[in-house]
Amino acid sequence: MEIRDLHTWPSTVEEAEAIQDRLRAMLEPGVPGPVRPRTVAGLDVSYAGDGGGVGTPLAAAVVVLDGTTLEVLEESVAVGTAAFPYVPGLFAFRELPTLLDALRNLRTTPGLLVCDGFGVAHPRRFGLACHLGVLTGLPAIGVGKTAFIGTYEQPGPRRGDSSPLRDGGEVVGRVLRTRDGVKPVFVSVGHRTDLDTACRNVLALTPEYRLPETTRRADRLSREALAG
Image (cartoon, rainbow, N blue to C red):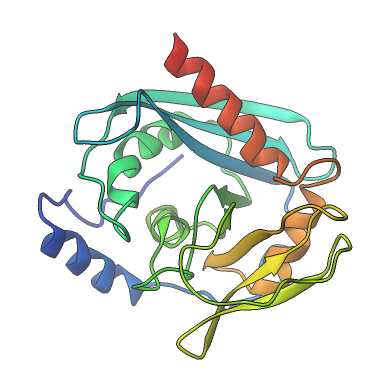
């Protein structure tokens, strides 16, 4: 699939933040998203060791699922190294070069990208899901295991219960219960979708487990690739 070449890779924090500021103007976060995407891609990255430092080996995986049956349609893996230091808020720059390699190898152009991370629920309102959405032009959302920023009240105990994730008075995501009595996930919009649709898609992707099938399968594939 095609990836837009919109920037060079930064070597400093200042350069990385400038890229985020420039690309943020290209976001389309509030448009109606794909309600029943025919294909959904999950993206995840696994690191060797503790994952710290530049040059740490990593494996990036993309798994494309049928949007209805959740059957695996295509898989792509790329192996590389962390391209940027670990800096909160700039984590995407560590993973993106290798993730984009994995995406370029796909024959399928997914209808939705689901990232293990965040979209606008980010200090600069430009997390990994935003970055991937702008570079690919595809609808993208982030589903985090824990909150990166913001405050919230616990949602109700039942599957589908939710509460707003707020930062500085702004709603930046939603805390969503995907299984009865299980810890919630943190959903945020990345690009070309709205929060209601993003949450409906996350629930459709979690028929049995807390995390979306996209994330679970991409995580497994990246770990297997890293293990060799």
